[in-house]
Image (cartoon, rainbow, N blue to C red):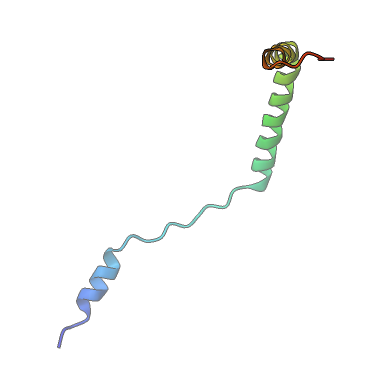
Length: 67
């Protein structure tokens, strides 16, 4: 009869499952707020360019009665 040592050795050679690190919710919320603030600042800075591109796109697509 076979000994069970080969099974134990095979199980010992398997890679151990890595534990998932929990993210700090404060860090996630703070980075999200920082990115949203940065996006808002960029939208305020480039507002005229965005509106001009939107108007020219609408004109290109054939919408005549733009506000």
